[in-house]
Image (cartoon, rainbow, N blue to C red):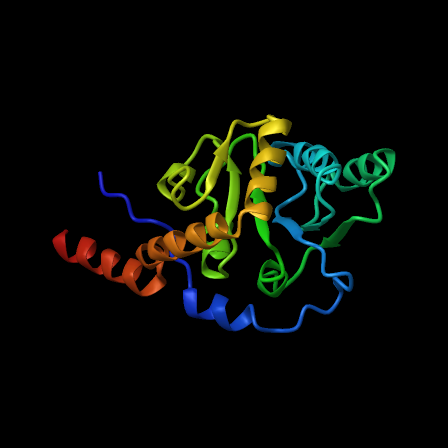
Amino acid sequence: VRVIHVPVNIEEIKIRSQEKAHNYENNDNLPCIGTISRLLAAKGINYLIRAFSDLIKRIDARLIIVGDGDERANLEKMVRDLKIEDRVSFLGFLENPYNYLREMDVFVLSSLYEGFPNVVIESMVCNVPVVATRSVGGLEELIDNGVNGLLVPPKDIKSLADSIYSLLRDKELKDRFIKEAYKRIDQFDSLKITREYEVLMRSL
């Protein structure tokens, strides 16, 4: 069996991340936590919202949620019930999410299970440190816990909040994760993956 990863166009992500983010303004310059996801139950966004609600008892911050889906109305109601709507922005589906990703201080993947989440690689390209759940799938091929990101158990609200807090409070840790993560992304570049397909096809 030969495993060839899904390709990521690193140069395109870098270019598109420099475009202006039009419908989000962080005028008070608060730390920004964010996620990019379909809003489905399996993505665990409800756990992220609850973790964020706990987090802002310790540090003032904002949460931006990029994406749409069947759970959006329920998630918006949860935000209202928790009385944190002044700190949470639902941006919906965006053709170019990378300029919003660039605005994040921490990217969070809160899925209950996953395949191979390209958005984690995209976060690494945009120099955004990642906190993610140990969801079933290829995530641990991307993140070496404590080296280039942080992994927490799915549904663990306290661990999720604590991990985000540690990255917001520890600039040295955040910078180290960014540096180590950037070393990992070349193996997923579309040019390298294309060559892997060439080698495979020739071998057949």
